[in-house]
Structure formats: C-alpha cells, structure tokens
Image 1 (cartoon, one colour):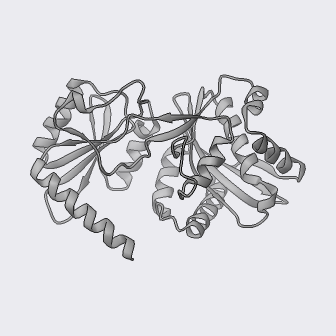
Image 2 (cartoon, rainbow, N blue to C red; image 1 turned 180 degrees about the vertical axis):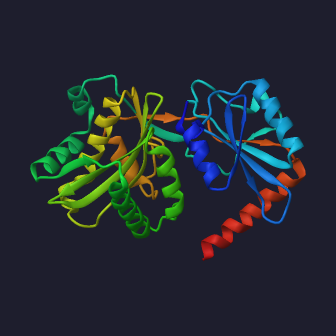
Length: 304
C-alpha cells in the first residue's frame, strides 16, 4: 500500500478540512467546487481496481454530486496496461497530478553493491562531500522540521516553484512523523546545506520533499544526503526506494525537470512508467464544462 492510502495520510487530509471516505478500503478525498453543490473525487496511488470497486465509486459519485473521480494507481504500466477497457466512463485524464514516470532503486543489495551501481560522478560527489567534512544527521523533530521547511521554501522561491504552503507541510509532518516521515539534514561546520524528507511505508522508501542552500554548493551536500536517505530507508526495512517522479528515460535536455531527473538517475535507478492518470466520469455534461474552465484558468495563471 502507498502512504497516500494510509490512515496517517487520511488524518492529515481531514485536518486540512478535506472530506475523506473509504470504499472497499480505498481512500478517496472529496473536493468541493466553490459556490456549487458539485464536487470532485480523488483516489491517489491505489492498488489495482477491480470492477466491484469501480462500480461502488460510480454509485458514490452519482449519489453525492461528483462530476468525476480522478484515479492514479500506484501500478506499473507493464502490470496493468490501462483502466479504460474496464469501464466506458473511464478516460485517460488530460490533467494528471502525478507524473507518469518515476525512478526506483532496488534495495535488495548490500550497501557496497548499491554504491557500485551508482554513476561514477555520483560516487565521486558522495566521496567529495565526505572528504570535505559534510555530515548527515537524522533530525526527525521540531528543530529538524524548521530547518527543512526553511531550505524547502528557499529552494521553491529560487526555482520559482509554487509548492504547498507551510500550514500544509506542518499538518503532513505532524501526522506522519511518528510512523512514516523522516527528516535528514546535511551540514558543513554546523551550517545546513540541504534537507530531505523521506517517507518509509510498507517496505518502500520515498523521496518526497527536498531543499538546499545556495551556499557551499561545491561541497556536494545533496549527493551525500541522498545516499544517506537511501541507506536509512534500507535500514528501516525498505525493499525499494521510489524517487517520487521523473521525466522518462529519453527526456528532452531542455525540459525544466532535466536537472533533478539526471540527479536521481545517478543512484542506479530504473526508470518505471506507471499506468497513468484516469478520470471516472460521473456527470459527462459538467465534466466537459469543467475541462473548458480548467483550460481557461490555466491560461490566465500563466499570465500572472
């Protein structure tokens, strides 16, 4: 099971004021459309869905004014070609929330074997950071969270990325910190260089959020930090480590995600394509209107 289907995540979403419901133990969040009685459902990172579950999702949607339910299974494309053939009301979503591709590391190896599988430049950068005196500490506590959020939001501002706000991260952290979430920080002479939040759940480690400082970039703190994050996930019983999103293997070098895709691939990863994002249409007429309004909204957001 994925952490976005966990009880801890459900509690976090409820604390944010988002309605949740479980159908056949699949966690569904319900999102209101302002000034209307209509809503949108979201079923994130589930296991495979059978006909019985799809039927119950449709029934719930019809009885509760849902326009559609977005479904994004945590299933490799090779194991489930498509959802479309299972129900005529399911279409491939034009607006995916998760990228279709990610990168996975097989942790069923020794640390030496893992290190040998890394790209030579990645190994060099890890050793350089160690040689220069960079140290990594797990600080899954209040102080660590404060350092993490500062580096995270500094990075968002620097890269012009509009991530979630501080309140969102506080709620997520408070609900996941005791069982799923961990914070690791790379230091140089007691100065934080980079911080990652990783999740470990159901024998899988996930790199979810990260941030870094503009200072001492030549010390390669993020490289050592990622290696320590991978080792921590392995120590905690993970069999795989998911980098949480990536471009496909033959990516365009001019794409804005090129940097972090290349960074992640240095750790001996395997590119994995997920089955993708789908919309289960409950109200076909309103779904068309929603799609039109969404396109207009996205256009004007780019002008701001």
